[in-house]
Figure (cartoon, helix red, strand yellow):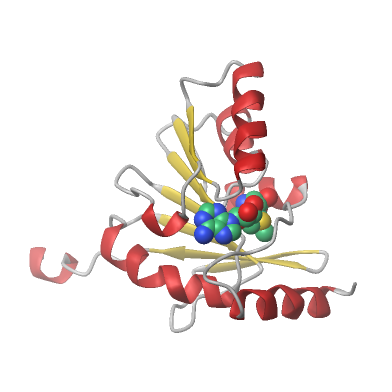
Length: 176
Ligand SMILES: C[S@@+](CC[C@H](N)C(=O)[O-])C[C@H]1O[C@@H](n2cnc3c(N)ncnc32)[C@H](O)[C@@H]1O
């Protein structure tokens, strides 16, 4: 399926479900580009909301040296498989995953947040992100934008688009 058609297919599915999005893994080169765009370093705690097979979390920790990675995955089968992978890779101390709805995620530790959902799902989670993420937190979304937010950067990889947003410091003005 061509890129544009595929994206509207995902978006239509998103319209008809709660926040549920089908499992479509990001290609490895997109995963790396997303973490690169967010400038992930060993100081970061990377969250992937809807983490699928955990490739974002594992790459963040193994390749980018992230201090910690946290994932939320609604599908039990994917979650259980991921728990096994994390154990097998000896990453249990640095990667934590929850078999829970991403709308219930505790985002308090996040410095980087990655998403590959849909436009509809992004709209549903936007108020939570605005309320709970610390200023300076980088959000990287594969393929889907946030209405009303202006991306700091946009990267393209064949037909994939990746958007980088940064949570603003709304009180910076008052500290001057
Ligand atoms: C398009 S896949 C992306 C997987 C992974 N983030 C990646 O980029 O490879 C979306 C994932 O979100 C999960 N998901 C959908 N709705 C969810 C929800 N409400 N809470 C947690 N996970 C959800 C799906 O099961 C699926 O694994």
